[in-house]
Amino acid sequence: MTFSILARCPRTGRIGAATTTSAVAVGSRVPYALPKGLGGVLTQHRTDPRLGPRGLRLLEEGCTAAETIAALVASTPHAHWRQLAVVDAKGDTAFYHGANVKPCKGVAQGPGVIAIGNILANDNVTAAILKGYLDAEGEDLATRLMAGLQAGEDAGGEHGDVHSAALLVMGEQSFPLVDLRVDYAEKDPIGQLTALWRRYEPTVEPYIQRVLDADNAPVL
Image: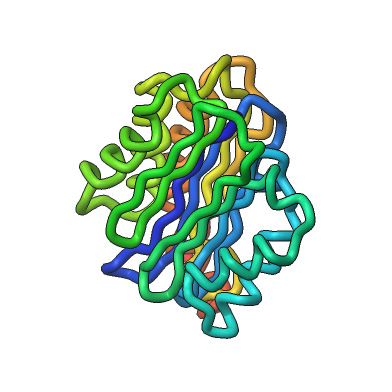
């Protein structure tokens, strides 16, 4: 019962993901991304968090999205339970739905972006996620990802209520530019995460300056 979006920003090269589910702490299991635009991975359904770092290593070694998916599927004896998505350094995307991934399951792909989901309320959710992201063109990557996630929820989301949501964006540095989570909320974790992002957004560049130029960094 999870739906997610993974994208590479063509303007900045940043990699980001946003995800939500009915369970607790989705951000600890599903989204993985590399700095310097090298790519990202989503691993969900009966989630195997080992596949995220494994996929990142493959991308760092120069594998394409399709090659990474193929290697991840071949590496696990439980591939029939896994749902995976990858974006690579060129913005190419690939995905895998195991045979036991429960319906409605879906995928939608665009230039440098992929949305996937399982146990969805209807067949339109992933297309709505993609449209929400594309319609927010001109905004920063994090805002576009959250627009996509909210559009998926507005289109019906998953069966039942979602309770956790997460937003991850990697830039040039080894640490995340954005790593925000609502680990559990009775209602509207996506809305709460969007509000958290809006509060955090003005601090992104100052926190980078604290790392690179601490002597002249602003007080927050």
